[in-house]
Image 1 (tube, rainbow, N blue to C red):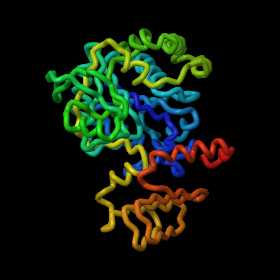
Image 2: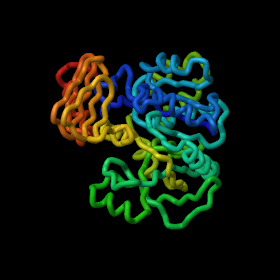
Image 3: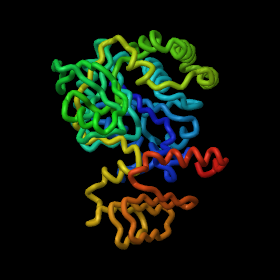
Image 4: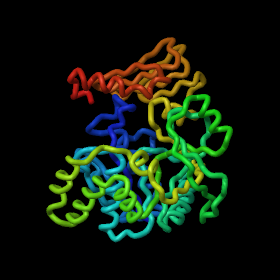
Amino acid sequence: MFAIIMCGGSGTRFWPVSRRRKPKQFLDITGRGPMVVETCDRLRPAIRDEEMILVLGQEHLEHARDLFRGRGVHMVAEPVGRNTAPCIGLGAIYAQHLGCKEAVAFLPADHFIGDPSSFLRALEAAGKLAASGGIATLGIVPSRPETGYGYIRRDSELIEADGGGAYRVLAFVEKPDLETARRYLTDGDYYWNGGIFVATPETILREMERHLPDLHKGLMRLRDALGTERFEAKLKEVYEELEGISFDYGIMEKTGTDVYVVPCECGWSDVGSWASLYELKTKEHDKNQNLTDGETLLVDCEKSFISSQSGRLVACLGINNCLVVDTPDTVLVSDLNRSQEIRKIVDQLKKSGKEKLL
């Protein structure tokens, strides 16, 4: 099996630590090293370095080369971000260029997996299902009524698959309200959509030809240039013309091919915000449910996340449910429960011309 690791995205919800020059996927968020390296290392028992392809932004290419120096991981750099559908399409034609005809795993570079063995077993089962021409996805078994994720609704009939069972997908569902999320959890027919897909390159390109014909035409122009000196110039030319569109919306919500979901209980987290990192590190909380990082001093504080990344002491008195992140050029103070909204601050910085802080 090949793997396409999607390394795009700016990680705005982890501002001010995540910046354009070094977004979340290249940071040590969980304490296990840069997340993209952690993702590739997690795959190594099942997938060789030479079968891994990083699709990343041009501005991060040199840093990625430093991180993977001495390893055979392939890299292809997008000149500009165009969301996940072009990213997956580019990965598919690159995998074909390397001779791949089997199933390929397409997965984000910045997720946390607590149980890698269970994850790889589910990925193997998905690969066997996808080999026949369908698309398989991993459905994260929900542990709470989460309103921040999309969901996958499954059929009731169990399909036997090597490495575990699977189901046909009935629908991909948008992020629900709390009452609906509680019902999903009770029903047992819904999984979190972790954005992890498995399909052959041929299947991916066939579905793009049917549902995203302009993207497919661009990819065919690129495929003809792969392995030549013309590729980088052609890549820039094609990407300037492409529409930004997600794979979920452009393909998965429209496809008529067989779509399967493999249930996966692997300690997954998208680590999508400071609040989710706070939850992920519950074992590191103090007796008052505070999480600290760096030089800090807390007095009469509860349920707060304080991170000093500047070398300065951050002292807090009497705060509750707060997020404080101190970097050399910026201090962020927020309600911890609203950390999903930090991109609003990033938007305001853009509007006010403070590009150097992004």
